[in-house]
Length: 419
Image (cartoon, rainbow, N blue to C red; front, side, top):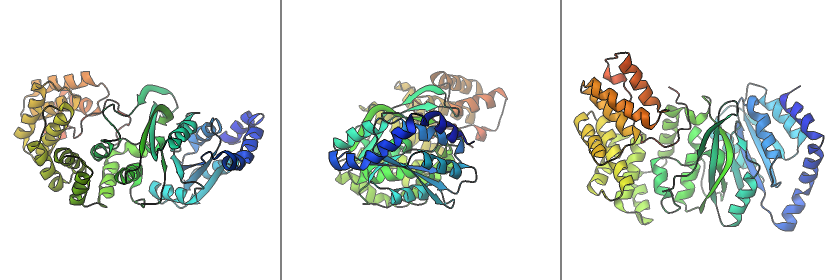
């Protein structure tokens, strides 16, 4: 007997009749009260281990007007059969099958099959909180077109890790577009949006499809609303698409191949952002893609326009210019910028780690270890500094093997890095 059928037998004594009765009422509810109807899109690839919990979380919703579209992307495990059994339990669940062509194509197919333009995303291994759709409906009713909420991190076995990820306090609807060029603040599983059909999905965006979608919506002035509540439990494990950072960087590079950076610069200026903000954001964006020819002039321009009174953007500008110099093998200049940040009281662990790496390059091993230890004290889950301390303790002499962090560390780390 499959895990889900066992779950069905456990629940359906009281739940199946309830689910069917709710389903039969959906059309009447929509026509009589005008309540929104949601299409939930979930790409599936070899996800049989998690599908039972995923489906059960939708059955527990306090808001009944939805369909769940599972797009099986050519799974080789029992996922397809399990979804077929889920569909038999509740007709709000649907199965769409395709050959294995990737997550972006699966999302696109799901939206094509959707019965609503109010779209909710969730990955196969994540769990919706019971109030997710109800709170999402409230936000849409108040004018939202693009929605993001908080999420709780669980491990592979569903155990809470004690970590909750929220939008940073400095992010507002006014600056979100610019900040989105520096790094994405959208997790696909916690997203919802009203799709107007005014852009195309990039079919090769892979694990960064949520970035592609959110950036296009923000560029088109979709009304963003943040829900300060936990909407999902987000499962972190080595098989997360977004855990593979090297692949994710390539996906982001693919996304930005759609844009001319000069046109982006002018477009952002026309939206009212100042030249420093735009230069810094685009510089960081293209630096992350390792496109130094584009990143360098933007970061250098930002240095000329820098506002020292804004500590957050000052730290970003100095740090990412130090990364640029490091990648250009200008180690003295990179170290100088990092040291300036320390003198001004900045204590991000990425800064301390990178000073340590520079000291290794300068053959000042004892000092390097002290800086690595300070970085570890600030963030004990910091993988780069753990790697560097191990090399030092093993008396490893090849400085090229030490990890120079190219991004300011976020307060909450959500992924295990895959080499």
